[in-house]
Image (cartoon, rainbow, N blue to C red):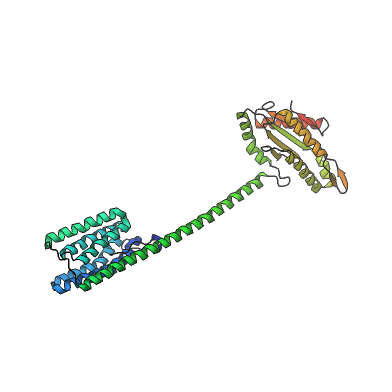
Length: 382
């Protein structure tokens, strides 16, 4: 008889000497279990046969069957091309030969019970209900063959020592079976918990990676000085926004904002002051945005705003508001107040343009006109 299988993670496959392949863990486990359990069965059979003084060849058959056969079965399964399939065949062979011994001895009650229930339990552990049916069929076939050759007889009586040893063997087997099942359940639960922890750790790592990717994308798409988007982000989104507005039959306005005389601020007060001016103007622009609006630092002192769903008139009013808010900025450099103004050009699609390039070009043309007409003003595309 064999114990039920332990989880495959607890047994390390070893290479077979002939094929060089790794044998299945079940082969090694069953080799150990079959060796001691069949030796115990051989002892029971020998004790039962001893009073009847059988012929000498019977003892040789008993020795070969219960001591040598487990080693032969192991070698055959270990060297097979499919070790697990070969071991299943070994267990069917177990059922067959034990059925023969049961019939050959005249069905001694306790021994016959052990010889029949062992293969059933072994095979059900590997193949479920189908394994029980196969074990019963093989066991029955062994009985029929032994009965046909040796003759049928029914001698159910067993001596008290044999009966007690049979009961003790069956009890020990069931206890070992239960302990093995309990050990297997604990190991499987530990494996599940470890997998759950690994899954949680992996999910945490994935979340961290997604966060880092999002932060990296923000860093790539943002201007580090003003915090507004850069031209890379604009190039990736402007066509999509135009297509969405066209699909929804909605306008989209573009606003080009330029800081007037910014070069004079840089040259007269230094680049750090110029950077502060850029950040202050960017803050005004950011505060004017609605959800869905996009503001980018387009050039050195230029900003471009995309306003999906906003018609030209509303965009012009927004541009005037930005211009007024910039003019109200309280900025100074080295104790000297700075007067900062912006010029703004506004265009709308589809009224002024049908694609992103022409929309930006029309807004830039309106900005150029605002510069030409005196700065600190808003002009819309013709």
